[in-house]
Amino acid sequence: MGITTSSQSPKLLFRQLFETESSTYTYLLADVSHPEKPALLVDPVDKTVDRDLSLVKDLGLKLIYAINTHVHADHVTGTGLIKTKSPGVKSIISKASNAKADLFVEAGDKIRFGDLFLEVRATPGHTVGCVTYVTGDGPNQAHPRMAFTGDALLIRGCGRTDFQGGSSEQLYKSVHSQIFTLPKDTLLYPAHDYKGFTVTTVEEEMLYNPRLAKDEETFKNIMKNLNLQYPKMIDVAVPANMNQAIEIRWEADI
Amino acid sequence: MGITTSSQSPKLLFRQLFETESSTYTYLLADVSHPEKPALLVDPVDKTVDRDLSLVKDLGLKLIYAINTHVHADHVTGTGLIKTKSPGVKSIISKASNAKADLFVEAGDKIRFGDLFLEVRATPGHTVGCVTYVTGDGPNQAHPRMAFTGDALLIRGCGRTDFQGGSSEQLYKSVHSQIFTLPKDTLLYPAHDYKGFTVTTVEEEMLYNPRLAKDEETFKNIMKNLNLQYPKMIDVAVPANMNQAIEIRWEADI
Ligand SMILES: [Fe+2]
Ligand SMILES: [Fe+2]
Image 1 (cartoon, rainbow over the protein chains, first blue to last red):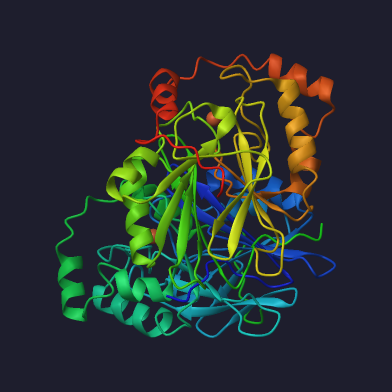
Image 2: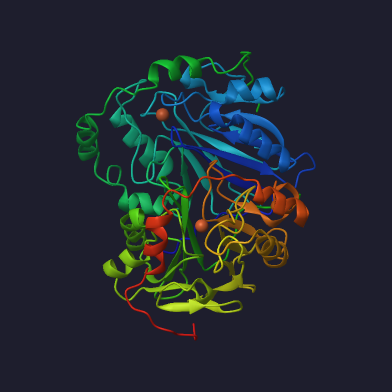
């Protein structure tokens, strides 16, 4: 395979961060060529907010957005705490999630930070409001592109589909139409990994994902027969994450 | 700071892998432009060998070297197991470590894989035989450069200096003369991280490393007063890691 596994833009600063208890990845992205070095965090966790804000400070960045891929059931989002500690940061989640946030996004929206942006793709199926954030396509944007898939696609896996409006049929369609159609060298960064992997590519998952590389019927059968336990954090995490922001405002123009 | 945090070469495939029990990072590097796609692993762990070899296979790589930065005291190296499961792979460690391996390296040696190479820098102090592997300098090599620092330099920290021939004075000199003299945007990848960080840069550590950014006397005092516990795996790991390879051969020409 003709893949490389690092992405580069003269403007992009990128950091992957891990929270061990829930095995969650948080991602920091910033436009360091812009005078203000505007930055955003994808899927911050409450327990690692101090670490993340300290890194933002060390790197001289200005955090403007704290973004979630979906309403997490396994950890409490760091968004609320970030907004308390760093007023001015705006929380973002999909409109379809029905969660609270400062800003709501839907398919096709662009989240701009400096000259860089993330494009929003609707990838429901793990939850009804899951979205995938994809770095922009263009000369100054990251190359290869990078996609933050949340739990829609995990490395050699995917999120469960039996809670929060999940649907295996919808997840299959989401991944095949919104993620597997990206360029093959697109770097995929999930919300979790439980085996110590940090990144994969569209090409790799199309070939080797043990669930999603199969046909739709096989996938639906796999998901139906997972026999997973009731998510241990769900009754704490979901209500907290539905109310993640302190203010509720609608702003379409982001 | 004008830093970016991803490295790129048209030839380099790079993957960072994590072993949760010992919080160890293993690194996979390969020249994917070369017909054989020769690859090497830095600091593999025995418990994750199957994961690593399965990834090597999925990516169509030919693993040629399994390399250690030093004789680890906190986990058993994967080198022995890799050689059993994948005959033909050669183990590499520093000559100064006095450990067994197929190939021994010292300062200035180059470890070549396809058109890419790692340069060896002696960075004793955590152990007597610690080395740092730095990606080559040149048009097809990774840019920014990448350094695999083992436990000589950790993100906002460093390895202890009270066992295995350690010396705080030597570690200070090693880091300041061999790592902090690299270009400021050099990406530093340690053998461990305990807070979920994945990477740092020379510039960041020169500014913010709470130990090594200090003057030498302060550093030596910090290290003398750490009051760390006896390393829990040391009596198992060190003898195992000293004997990591099945064959012992000297080959200077690598
Ligand atoms: Fe989830
Ligand atoms: Fe060590």
